[in-house]
Amino acid sequence: MIIAIASGKGGTGKTTLATNLAMNLARKGQQVQLLDCDVEEPNCHLFLKPIIETTETVSLPVPQVDEQKCTGCGQCGQICEFSAIVCIKEKVLTFPELCHGCGGCTLVCPEGAICETPREIGVIEQGRADEIQFVHGRLRVGEAMSPPLIREVKERVSHQGTSIIDAPPGTSCPVIEAIRGSDICILVTEPTPFGLNDLVLAVGMVRALELPHAVIINRADVGDRKVVEYCRQEGIDLLMEIPDDRRIARGYSRGQLILDVAPEYEDKFQMLMDKIETMSASEEVKA
Image 1 (cartoon, one colour):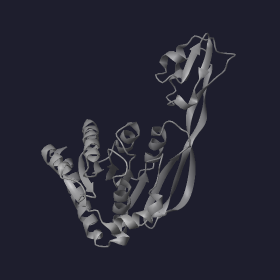
Image 2 (cartoon, helix red, strand yellow):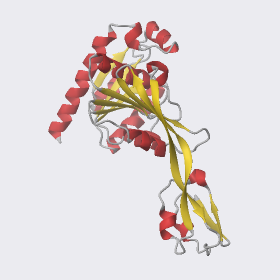
Image 3 (cartoon, one colour):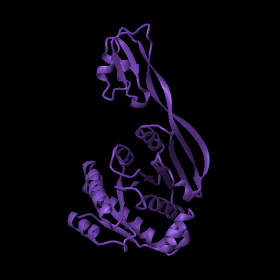
């Protein structure tokens, strides 16, 4: 099963949930993998402290023009939707930072004047944290697009045991790339006006992707109950409410897991996993 952990906004506790759920499964002797797809700001490693075993460079193919062959016909610029390659007065200009690596310009060039050259966009690091298989991506500083690196991280998804994906915050392209193809998406929110507003956006996103989804409320006893009311009205399962526990906050600031600072949560995370498995089984029956 592939479980995606997402949120409509940052700072709701998405990483906290992903790391603790993964560690709880590992301590139960189950095969589990954690993939940190928040490649612009990966932070699962701060809590799991994995031993990194391999590091791979990830590159994106970008166009390189042979000016001696180029006739300035402009077909390459016409096919590019992102203006990564343009023809101005029979002079071809390329903007590698805008390129999505689709290869369309090389296919339409009638003179074969365009080839592809690799441009580094980041790295993928893999290792182990106790019994957890750990994978995360690190986007190169200044890089504009994270989806290509996220796709490469997801290529490492294991199809044995449970894979947990820590998605980027928000509802834009990186999040969609991270959660696409998951068996279930857990949306983490907080009981505030901002939390509710962004949860509504996130629910719209997962529904558009036709992904089974449910909600977890972090710091549930601090705000109001409007998030609970919204979930009830929309028929969304509320799987867990995590209180505003000072032990959790103190442990978080030190890079410690909830399971280590509040051991009674071991049973709660096991109950959470049982609910997720029940939901997944129910969706399979519907399918």
